Length: 400
Image (tube, rainbow, N blue to C red; front, side, top):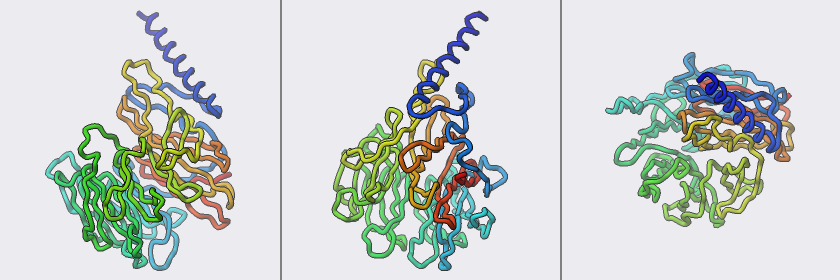
């Protein structure tokens, strides 16, 4: 029995080593040894590539207990009529206006004062937030969302508009803010698992449509990912939800043209692209499926390093894409924050990729965090720095 057990561990180690070597052969060599994951704790190495290229500095922590205080929203830009660029970060109950050094300029509560009858549903905790000057008056508003409520807060924490979901309307998946009809004021676009509804800047409903995917019994998170752009080439903004395109009046203008994707990126020509991970690559295509950009993405198709019979691997479920000038003031880097989900142990983690102007990976890091966000912070010399949230902290990445 001891002989069999020792050989089993040896065989597991050899399989893990083989997979890591296969991954490194794709384009780059891993700089740190990997450890096999087990069913109790997802042990992934931190920095694979680029150790020494970037310096990291923690500039802010949203709470002493980071487990319950994930950063749910991250914004860099002017927050009021004075047009001073600040950092605005939110957690599940508060908002913080910060200087570039992370010092708190202002802090206020975001309270819904709503409680679900279901004790398992934390209807008063913000799960994600977006920041925009919705009414066009010069001060930004915070669009905070729980699983059941979407609300707009001013910079004093007062609720100026609220929309309640629930059994009849569905649970919130996404909320967008954009001037759809180009009349000069933004619309609020709410997307639940049942419908899409568009409101004007004052909170009045303009139109509501049922989502085709709501009738399906087989769907994934990507069926509810939404983006606003000119997808049909008519120089008007449309709303893409999953694989359905609505015009600004709620009419379906395209359907079933889009394969599964994980996020959106504005192409180098300004046109919207859909990103997906496939065979160790990150591929960006237009809505017609034409490939426009392609990047190597090591680890994106790495299977779970264990011998369990029902292992499904690490599913890449979502990604945030951002272009920023990290290395110099002329060339843009592509920043990718991919969300991976281990279906076997029900655990989430993230992979950060940074590409140079030629599409080469110059930095790659795995993050054991329930939620991470990225933004670009401008510098005086015309370059930018990466601002990344992880486990309730804000970290600033600077090129060395």
